[in-house]
Length: 384
Image 1: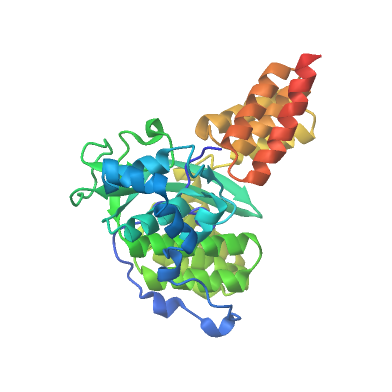
Image 2: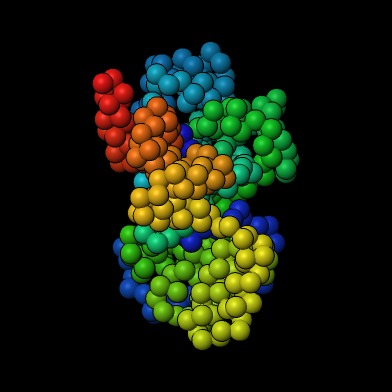
């Protein structure tokens, strides 16, 4: 499974911004409105080295690599070696270092956290990097999620802001193939921002599961860790929207837009709040601005394609799914539906191709196994 993913942003956010928000996050919190949850992992616990990780690092094979190649290159090679940890991509949940190691799986944020924990145990400096990649979208339980990407550098010297990835002066550990990140611009970020990303992911995952109270505490902690991490303001706004606190939701979305005026999802969320508040004029103004900036939002062609499928208009559906795939060629769901459309049209070869790509780009083990089973059925039909 291969896809670009770093952090999940509730109702689809963009990359984090550098300007500090004009509002202190403490003014946005309303703890009394949410049921307390069991204590969530602290920053130290997120990056904690478990006994299993410590045993792995002290194993003869790993120690041999570290001694013969040096600490940075040795760890780089150990993590890159597919015959070793056999790390798999899985976006089902954002894991701590210990959880990612035990599962041998995680999204790239989880795997970066795991790598940082190992590097810290080996007393080597690490630098976290946000990698600027094309946005990739997914949708689940009525929420839109946008994907970014982070990696980690075991540098011999401090790296500068906004360098280009070329591997010339540091060991960059990235759980994507080098071709996918080469020449991409990067920006150095702090461990506090990584922790905020982790907590914001957990908030978004809780929202997808309908656990609004749990999502609040995660989003709150994200902003406590990094008040300048703008995506968490939008996540908190979604929490308040789900809770029915329209005024605080409005304030959270407006805070996002003050730092990121072109944040289209925050615009969309704010328009929804204005509609619910009965401010028809401002809602219409926001919707018009959204349409001007993005006349065909993510999933627009896909939703039209599904409607065409339901009307048995498979040719139209195929063309609409193709339009969506041109915008996001790594979305497994789009490939799955394109496979179904081609199957209905009798194009078994194309159906098999797209189902195979759906398997390769699946982001969870459950999704992967579902598409793999359907791929086997298509292959069986091709043999007859």
